[in-house]
Image 1 (tube, helix red, strand yellow):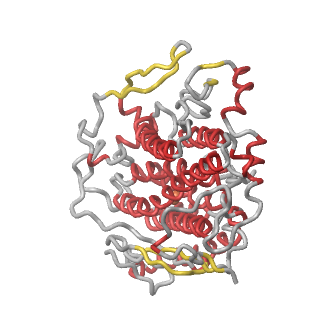
Image 2: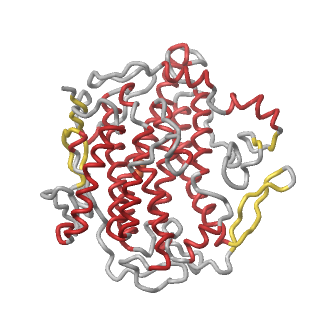
Length: 474
Ligand SMILES: [Fe+2]
Ligand SMILES: [Fe+2]
């Protein structure tokens, strides 16, 4: 385990060649995948040589290899983290039993559904981002976009492998469907709402990789605790890749903030728009939007589905095995969940089992908060009096407890009339979007150069020179 076999058509560390049937089934799916990549992956990118990292080992520190590749030739493969010896189930009804190498019949549809929902988001984000390469602010950013895209493609492979290997004919059908549903398609949309919106500009892309990929991290973290060991090991490896996506988001936003501050200071103005930057107020509106739609991805605050998955030992909490505060079965514990009570919001203790989604969302919010703090330090360092914040968790929600309420970013319940009056102050207006997109009509392809609205990164990728040609056009 660990070394990845690249001599096969499908690189893998699961001894795929020893299971001819499975190998043939996946090799039959492979051309459809490549077709999908060429049709709905990044536009006009097929012949470009992109400086990408590829996994070469699933368990060592130096797991990545860097080199220029054409994306359709990227070695998408199947990589699972090394098995943990004598791994035991850490939560739910099956706590203490050995983990499962095969799917138990009684949980088959539950586990399949979780895999399908997770898997569907992976190609969806590639589809959402497919036009961004045309407007990239630099070759560095273009390369990062493509790295994220190929890895999301690999995450699809990860889920498709599980479907093929463990779910027979239904699994193969589900794998085919992954390439039939498309982001924003009227007839066959992607499963989750947020994955049917286009990612129209780079500010949105950075927000998406910071906020929405981070939802992915927490979902994967919960699935990495699963008693179904192949799923757990698959998700652990995906988490390593996911970390880079969030890095792209966090540093991307930080660079936009920095550039805006520089423009404000250099020109002694409050309005960097006059000098082709993005004003902090607009960045705040993008945060409000992306944070609130990403909160929705965690599902309802009170959820019997989540309780059932937990009790069945199928989906745990984040870092479940390392948690020490309770018995990992949650029979008698409670958890505080914010609810709307008489025109205000109050925490109400509910059975912890029903609040699994909310507990995961709370951890997510905490991490988002630290990102915002780091951006604020950039603003502070420039001596500018402005603070970015996360909006209240009830703000602009479409799912769960708060969906029927109009709520201001600071958490006041307001009337619909007030909402309509202010929503353009709180969420990106049509005009804001047009402005942001107007900054990005032309791509910057010159090595070492950056668009005016974003600062260069602090570090290059893999220590290469600052004017490195991350993407070569031919
Ligand atoms: Fe992913
Ligand atoms: Fe991701």
